[in-house]
Amino acid sequence: MNKSVVISIPVHEDYDVIIDHLNNIKKFVPNSSVILHVSGDSHISLFNMLNRSSENEFKGFLYINQKQYLTYSRFDAGEVRGLSTVHASNFRYINSLVKFDVFALETSNDMFVRKGVESLWNNYECATTLSTTSVEDWLANTDQIGKDLIANMNKFVEIKVTKKFPQEGSFYPREIFKQVSDIILDGLDNKLLSAEELVLHTLAYNIKPELHESCVNDSYVFHDHRYGATANSDILSVRNGEKLNKYAVKRVPRVMQDPCRQFIRELTKND
Image 1 (cartoon, rainbow, N blue to C red):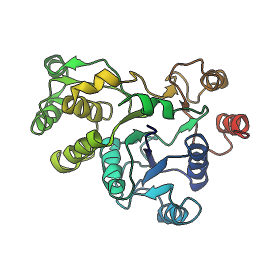
Image 2 (tube, helix red, strand yellow; image 1 turned 135 degrees about the vertical axis):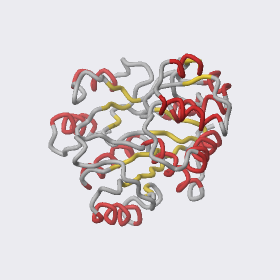
Image 3 (cartoon, rainbow, N blue to C red; image 1 turned 180 degrees about the vertical axis):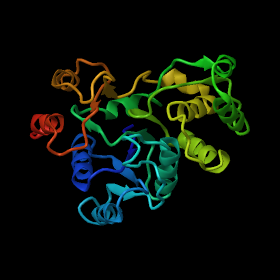
């Protein structure tokens, strides 16, 4: 069965960069839908322009979460916060609007360079790490904020192990992410969660440990943390299928004329 997917993305950058990203997704994942969260720090014109695009050229493909959290500030040196809450809010907004099977998470500086990512969610239930840490070990090595977070999560699902993994390039079944979303938005005081790589994956696993029986054990987004922008050689390796289960790359700087972004557009223009 070919599963349908919703891709969730938080955005805060220029309109033309976001449109470039949307066109990239539409080309490489044509049967997907996209839900965007526009940071509350963004100019109101960006929010309005994206809403118009969702009603016109991207109608039926693009949806804009009408709730805005303050996740980004130009005074915070590019730091983005609250992504767990944002993805949960995106899910809640689109859940009643679109029929879908899979909820996938991305960031606004990803771009696809290879077709076929659908094979992952058609053959696996989720994409995340199989690595876990016992909750006892986690608590022994975290601060009071981390301990309080686990205590709050325990009120809604018994936390036996923790999982820490990037959000981008992960995906989960709709019914599992609904439970994750409900716990975050209704149970964890609806606060902007700072433990971005911990919360979603830990909740999902402890809700349904059987997910590990059908898990990619990876993200479909390639990211080399050593570099500010993805190297052209790595882009070509992903495109040629040399990096297992990778279909997109990060980081692609959020500037239209950036060489990395231009390289990807030229490379994929005939796809």
